[in-house]
Length: 351
Image (tube, rainbow, N blue to C red):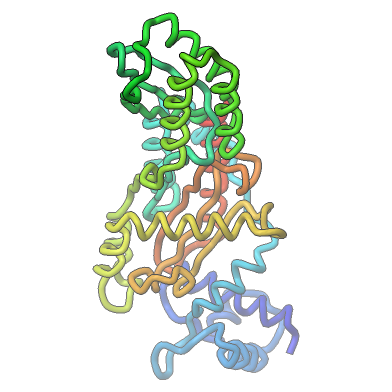
């Protein structure tokens, strides 16, 4: 049997099943697709695909539907993704360009992605660990307290109150101004881990009376940029799952419970990000997990399509965004939308 023809038959089955939600039979394939072979040959090909585990027969005397493995082969053999039309690109660019700050950009993105794909959309906030520093602001609150404000190059803002160690000389505006200027000169544009080395060098280059202040500020900055609790996500479009309830074998409750635990999605996106950063995969700008590949029982009948944003590659990205929906998904269209939105969001959040 021709491997190319078997792949064509699988593509046809996936396409028909996604569009009709009905199991696909050999007669349907003959009528709808120009495969250039007889119905008997198609039946033989379908039997081989079923034996290989790529399609299955859900009911006696029914057609076939793709399995998770079948969808995986289909996705892995997508030669190209159909680009968005010029009006679609202009609409995305215009909508995201209207964002007034990072929160607005993230919220606009998640709503847009859900609308484009008719799936649950998920957007990670830019990770401080992956971001560079745009500015460190120090505000003198009292002689022994300073408000430290960190502004990342993606527009994320974090505030921490710093109480100086006992025995440190009282601060005044001139000392705060000096520390602010030196830290910004050393830190702006740097990412972890180069940031801490650069900041610690500042403490070695100031007067002994100022060095403890610098070290205290350095500790606050680096701790804030490395703490695990700073990652968060926003979601939109959960109602789309209810409309797709018939795509799940029993109930959508396990799916809803899984996505309500945001840590599940954050872990999944982190795993997908790590995979994209492995040698040989850095240029794959869209990642797909199908069914059991999500490694979570509640998501075993779903697929996740995700892409990095905020960098030239997954290794340089500041976060991921994506969509979650039933495995019976229009993968080419969904992957195109996710990739396009990630690219436009990158332009918004990176200087």
